[in-house]
Image (cartoon, rainbow, N blue to C red):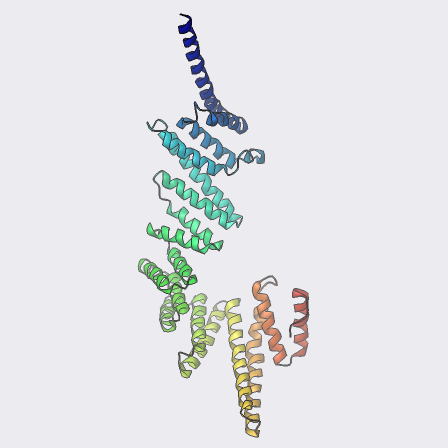
Length: 410
């Protein structure tokens, strides 16, 4: 009888120990419901490390919920209870799913996954607004993966992950995320222009054309995709096809300054391409000027168009100057000196009368902190030097010294 009595006592003691540990989960839930996150955290830490409760699905559901509360708490002290609490929550709920062989915790698991997905999404949105785009992409993707785990394909969140990655400069990651989004036929025309643009970055022109073709087939009237298609042709060197696409776009939206600018860039590139005849390049040069001016007419502060037009004229002046120099290389005869002088005067006229107003206007349109500020200022300094405008040259030299320091460039 004594042995039996001892056995009964031991059994009762074991049951009591198990119940004690299960009470840790109960206490954790109670404190969680009361908003006492620190106390809930202490109780659940005891439960997840104890052999009698760490293999219970309910334990890990509670653990995941507490981690979500830690991640979303406004109190910094609570947030420091765990590192990457949302990641821990995802791991915990995955454990719960594996342990829940009889589906006793199915609804709790699904509800927790839904809350976790929203928590990751909110983390991504906050990071995006803070311009922490790499972190935003990571959070959005995790939100998508959590949704996927309970059978929901959240293509909008997957697209956000790709967009954030692209802005962060993570171009390979962005491409993969966009491509996966496209597999689900996400209704967003910018998806295809982005995929085409990222393909161009890799110099994969065939792939770029495939993506833009898919996008144009789905959204034939979308002007942004028409513009993107023209850009694909421009980048790949197919200027006639780019021109055809842009003409189509301008017919549909003649007041769109961006399209006239793109048309100008198309002709600008064509005017420099020796694949075309001299007559074709001269024609393209004239069309580029007209298109740049049309873009500026439609948008008076269009920096890119204004600067490009100034640069186009400036480069024309350079070409005339080089022609003058080449004539003298043929010999310093009276006739050659006359021709060279005439071309040199013509180059100065193009610089001062055509290029200068646009370059000066471009400089007024940008902040001193803008990366383009140095480029425009450098162009003006060279123009003033070549045209003998010493007073303006001195002014720009002073601006250069104040802005960039060090010795003045020659």
